Image 1 (tube, rainbow, N blue to C red):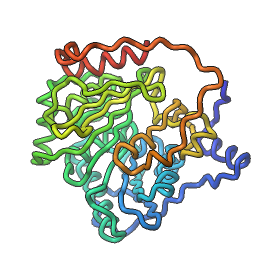
Image 2 (spheres, rainbow, N blue to C red; image 1 turned 45 degrees about the vertical axis):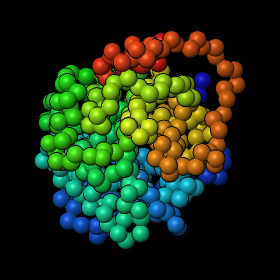
Image 3 (tube, helix red, strand yellow; image 1 turned 45 degrees about the horizontal axis):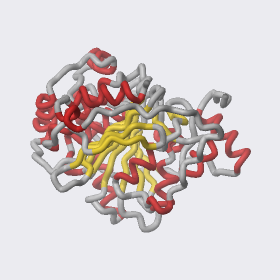
Length: 359
């Protein structure tokens, strides 16, 4: 069994001593990006020749640089040639350093601050405004979805890790209820919340949803609601186009009318609350990232898979997953046939995938 580490910084120090890896995040402070109504801090990394941009949003009790070190976004960005923007919450805004996705007024102000950061970087660094994406974990995942809902024309895609649907809460009390899976709306109602927020009518960003079947902080039910929200916006029927096992995770994928992936949902057996990276500490560092609190060695690297889905990572240059020393036998779960999928609601589709992933 791998020995647990007291903190992410402890893990970084130990790995630096053993491998010579530089450890610290290369993110630099970003200033002068606008009026900043949400009073957020900002950090950025722009390697030479970068064109695309990924916004990464940390969870509660995290900070921008620690989250980047854990998930490995700037390591991947340097290798693949895209920029990274990492907004950071300030203590006075939220004592737990959570983004205020559940507060309509504060959430809107923070979303506008992040939009100003994005526009500033695109303009000053010559980035491609058509290749801007956002990814976040937990409260950062919910805030990523807030951005996708309120500024859909600004983003080509997003990855929501253990997050919640837009409109799930309008107060801290409602947020806690939603995290436990207590919010219920029909798919059309979820979609209409986004339509009212932005007035946008499409095209909509490509969405990746990541959820651990063993997450007791943000209930897996929220992944089903996220899928329902974005499938309704994309106007896609509930039957997924494909259902495959990738690195031990089940990926459901829905395509648009042109046959392009529009929504995908990843469910992971045994994964608790956190961003999945891996496999193994050494392999994760080669790919980018180090395991630590809420950055979990799960045998699949969500950072790379997200970037690859957006066309920012070259599959020809990716490092293959390291096989387990003694692979454990596992019977492949039986999946419903296409006719059965077609008769299910989006919630039933995701819940079925959760049961299969956790069996």
